[in-house]
Length: 451
Ligand code: ARG
Image (cartoon, rainbow, N blue to C red; front, top):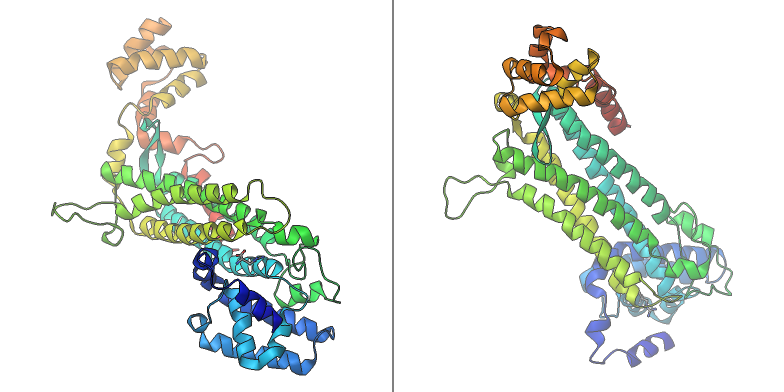
């Protein structure tokens, strides 16, 4: 056919390999077959091609599918290769498949069709992680642990409170992926090269056949738009960044002996026989860098592109595939590592009291007794220079407040405030670490993940 002849004119140059997206296109092989089928069915329904012609093309597509991606003839991309394979099977009539469309709307449709699946998988991974975090949290509502700011001991909290802090953060990542999904799930098909087509196509029908929720209506926007890729990759980069914090914490906590990773998620050294290293979590941590690079690569490829289709778009797409694969895998690994790690209750309890972590609680106690918080802060800070016990606090009270500590609060209340477990248990404000506050977060986590 003239179409094939035209392509042949451009088929042998030294830049052929450079032009080709075949290697990356394996990912959209099935998507392209689905798009071809929907388009041909619609063309037949609209009377643009005859039913027997459509039937011949559809059965050729079945043959192309069973033969598989590797059996495709050489082509500039999967769209051209499948069309050539169809023509090889059924002759010239196969050339009718490309009536009223372009590779520009075709590729945009294929990417969206495939990416829907990938986004759903990424969402599923976030749910798996949240489930792991909530399950482990449920077992540790009373397990005290040190909380840090600036990586310095700050205030006692509980393992449940800590884990749910990540569950909630990842919940927002799930929500962002669902939002992005809604905008991915729109059909550009029928936009043709960018200027629509004089054929009587039914764009809603192909959208429906392909399970899209509606159209990217403007035909120029439809072939040019890749903001849906940016949105998905940005959501993934955000997710990977969230999870990198969890990974980093677990690396640090295992270094401090507060948690032990299961062997399944650890690695060893080729020379130092005693080593048990948190390599998997380090790779989870590193994935956030890859995702940020993917987002940057994508935005840089898209920046300043003129309307309408430009081949630069071919190089933009793989950033999305690489990012979605890497982040989905990293999230699943983080879920497994979190689910199987062992928290050391005793080490956690010891560490929870280190660095006078209950100082804020003592200041709070004095403030509740009417001492201005700033003054109480000054007094406890003074005591902290000497020690974290009653005696140090008492002499600091004399010095800063001009009275013994007992003039403000009972000794027993001070001793309670100095206890890390009591400290965590007393922080029962909404969203706080007290078991009754954490219970609400736990219920919310379990309910939303199940939903
Ligand atoms: N393989 C191309 C891509 O991934 C689609 C082909 C559009 N080619 C063209 N010359 N208009 O974007």
